[in-house]
Amino acid sequence: MANKNQVLNNNFYDCGLLEQETGSGIGMYESNKNIVVNNEITNCGGFGIELNNSSNDNQVPKNIVTDCGLGNEPRASILISTSNNNLVQKNEVYNGFAGIVVENSNDNQVMKNTIEKMARSGIGLVRDSSNNLVKKNYVSNCLNGTLLSKVHDNRVSKNEVTASTDFGIIVRDSINNRIDGNYVSGSGLWDLSERPKPLQNIWEDNIYSTWDPY
Image 1 (cartoon, rainbow, N blue to C red):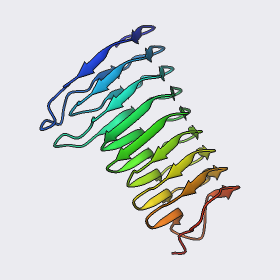
Image 2 (image 1 turned 120 degrees about the vertical axis):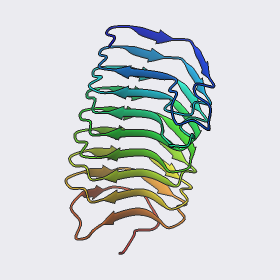
Image 3 (image 1 turned 90 degrees about the vertical axis):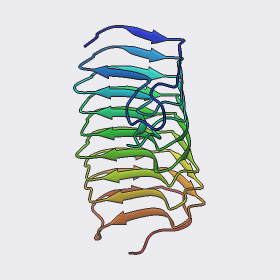
């Protein structure tokens, strides 16, 4: 537990070998109102940056996270779990298992991040997360650009998602989310996808080439 601290201008590397599933670069648990800024985190078997267990009102800007989450138990480069009202912005995330994942968390903002080359999703909103904003991110060369799974009342707006192996923006078993103003191109399967149908989310003003008809 730590409150009102700053973690800045550090280099973290080899934080848990890749053959291990543990070892986060920066971890916060029950920690509030901290700032994590201008750090470089490389080659962590676990999470690059982790906000977990009621870590609220934190700011995570301008960090570079590379080659993280690729251990025996793959994890996200940046994780927000059971934590609310955090701001994750202007980070660069490269070559991991998953980019930025928000699970069972509310009222967070994921904005203006660059995410490239993820084995799974570039950005994920999962497990009953709600009222989160995903805006103006650049996501490229991931399996899926942005995934919403079993969530509600989130907004995904004005992101650029390119060259996804499968889906650009994929929504599964979710309701009342707004997906608007995104530019999605070059997806291997479909640029936009929602299942099951009929549609239960709002799609507006997106620029795309292919829509999943199934």
